[in-house]
Length: 125
Image 1: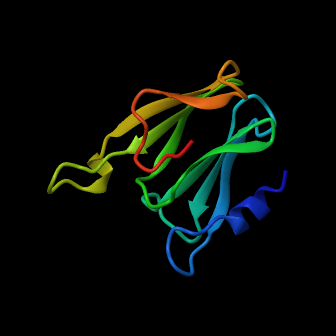
Image 2: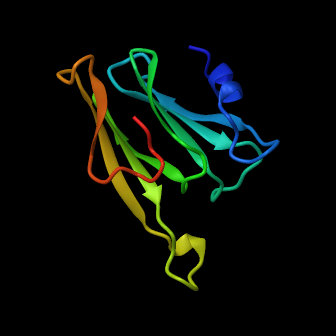
């Protein structure tokens, strides 16, 4: 799997700004993930998460939503931690994260990445 090609073909978070390849795991397994980071970005810059099942893309989180971090993961689940807006007047460092766990559901037709918990804003399946 060419993760550099995936990063290059994914529309960037801002005009003229693309993605760099971040952390990835188990891309050809039951449920894997690929993080795309804003090229030249900072720790508060947008990220995009792409979920995979046996090498096929099954879900994408758009880069215009809050920053997403990886929680835990295994062969059948990926936990995404989505940064929430900080309380008015507080710095970004005070922001909290809401977690959503995606599990691979082999019994849903052809299978899918089923969320457990609130679906992060902008996540599409």
